[in-house]
Image (cartoon, rainbow, N blue to C red; front, side, top):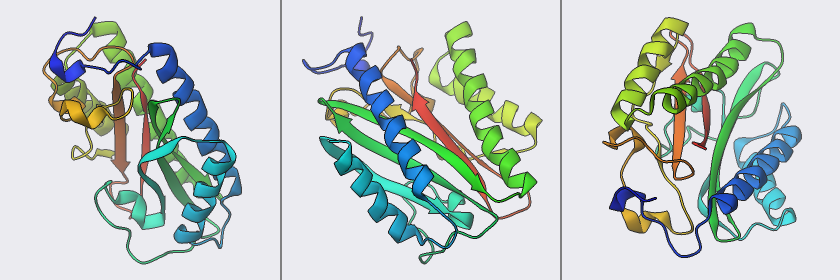
Length: 219
């Protein structure tokens, strides 16, 4: 089943395990999103998110929990948030959660909007819609990583958004996937196999200081 060393897995790996941790990760994100309200600081939201994970019995976190408000939604994973902003009445935020349940790594993320800013709602919806289009392109055409993100950039432009190509997906597996040194999905020269890769989509509004993020397992 494994085509290259970059798609190697450990003895604990199973597709069923990956789908289970995906479901648990989305449940955690949904619970966090329901508890985030205008007036809350980013730091408070992260503390709340960690409490949600404890309540759900997560095994461990494999990458730091990211919750970004407002203009910080333009930041990449490795960039620190600017200050500790409060969520406004008309605002948006995203949650990026990498966590382990039953020795398998989940990594999911989504953008949520509070209030009635139509462009923010459109941006959040566009990130999910673009993810779906790119995933469907992978399923239908069995393309390699570079072509997948070329397609994503073309579709984002057609939709009126700017795709952040510094964010190009990555491996997951049974913990820890990092030992396989697989690099970014967007640089992977083969068609990614089911249950091994995270597709990440981060877009920016063309003129206003906010963006949206969506990621999930290719499965």
